[in-house]
Length: 437
Image (cartoon, rainbow, N blue to C red):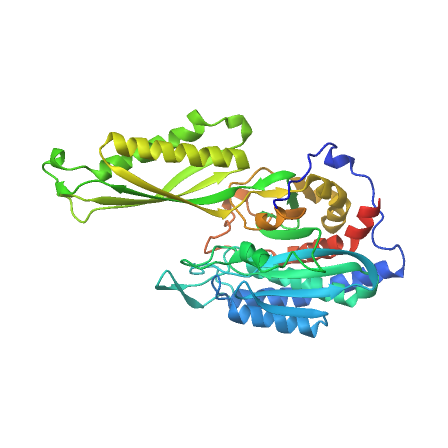
C-alpha cells in the first residue's frame, strides 16, 4: 500500500516548540557524546572513502559496518539484506515507537581526481568493463554519520524512548544489469514489517550547499526517475537510395524532437515540472548504409504520480505515431528507477525544532524541487519520512564553482558531519516526545 502524506495546512515556521530531550544532566551527557563522536565519524568517512565498492558489491563495506555495530553493542545486527544491506536494531531504555534511520553505501564508476591523501585507488567491474571506483556522491559520509548516530544512541540508550532501526542500504545508484537491489528490495525483504516495523524514517544526503546547512522541502523534493529505452526498426538499404528502405536514423531524429514537445504542449505544466532527456542514440556501422535499427536511451523526471502516468502514455503514443508515419516500428520500454521523494509535511513541521537545534535556526532553509532522484522515496511511499540535504560545500568557494555530486572532484567539509549526526540523533531522541505534543 502506498503511503500518501497529508496536505500541509500550517506554515512550517509556525511549528510549536516541542518537549524534547529531558532538560537534565542527560542533556550534557548527550552533547558530550555527540562532540566525542566526531573523530570516529571522520575516521569512518575516510576509511569508506578510500575503500569504495559499487552497487550490490559492497561486501567489505557491509562487513565493516556490521562489525562496528556489534562493537557498539546494538541489540541485533542483520546482514545480507537485499544482497549486502545491513540492519542494526537498538532498543531504548524507555518505551516508545520504532523509527528508522537510513544511509546508502554504494559508490560510482568514477576515477577520483580530488588529490586527497585518502583518495580512492579502487577498481571494480561495471557493465562488463573494469573501471575506477569513487564515493563521488557522498555515501561514505552517509555511512559515517549513521554509524556516529548509532554510537551516540547506544551510549545514551537509557534516555532513548523506543527503538531505532539503522538501515544501511546497498545499490542506491541502481543495481547492475538485470539484478534487483536498493530500497525497493530491502522493503520487499521486510525491513518495514514485523513486530519492530518503523512508523517513520529519516535520511540525509550531503550536497554542495554551505557546510552545515540543512535544506528541506515539504511534499515532492526530489523527482521520480524512469529509464526510457526505444528501439526504432526500419529496413536496411544503400545510403544512396533511401527510398528503397526505411530510415530508422531519420525516424529517431524526429522522435527525439517530438518528445521535447510532450512536456510543454501535451501536459499541464501547473501540475509539476517534467524533464525528458535522450542521452544515447546508437545505430549504423558506416556512412553509406542505412541500418535496420536504432537504439535510443534516456531518462524521465516528474514530481507528480498522475503527471508521470500521463507522460508515459503520451510518450508511447508520440513515439509510435512518428515511427508509423515514417514506415518504421517502435518498441518502447519505460522502467521505474525511483519514485518521487515526498517529504511528509506534518512530520517535517513536528521535527523542525530538532533540525534547528542541530544546525542553528538560521541554517535550516527551504530548498527548491530537485530533478535528481533518490530511491529513498520507496520508503516514504510506505511510511512518513523526511529526506534532507546536508550542506558540505566550502563557503569560501562560489556555489556555482563547487564540484557537484558525481564529479571526480567531489569532496566534503568534514566539520559538517557532526551536524548530520546531531540531526539523526535528534530525530531518534525527539520523535516520541514530539508525537505527544
